[in-house]
Length: 258
Image (cartoon, rainbow, N blue to C red):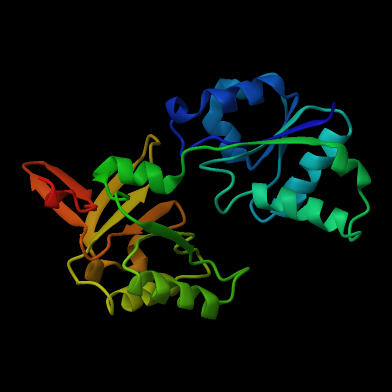
């Protein structure tokens, strides 16, 4: 049986990799991923054939994983975080959809058994580091306009702002794209207070992790890179400090019952 595991391995800490993800990797002969993701997994990947394709080769990774699995090799396509959130799972199913439409010439892909295994996302890891920031309704928005027009992204930010959602921004900046985050900040300042807490979580759960809690009006793209998760509280999110400890939580309304 042709088998493809589509695996999310969490934010980086080996203890946060789900047992089911490890089982899938152990069962696979071939691993397809961006090299950093395999490095983070360490010895779990020993003895496997590695297919390391660089950033920007996402379509190539998905095609290769389907080809390997269709050829009879039990294969794991791996992404950090949750592979179904701004990651590789969607590409696998997009390719299968194109095959069903007759726009691809790989009928063998349709015989592959596919299992998607979720992982802990960066927004979850970040929220856990500061308390309970995602305690009420929240959403995610990718600020990359490489695949989505900025007009669409801008509309979604306005909608999230007017709906008072906690917002986690993925792909906040890159070397060639550094203005969208500040534009997003300015949009959100139309809907919520300047003192709204913002989490900047860089390299979450990894050895060089750094955590900062700032105000919304202090958010600046120059302090952020592609390894940073930016989460913005809603109008009711609270930043509390107890000596050297500080936390952010978003209440759900339990205060009415306390």
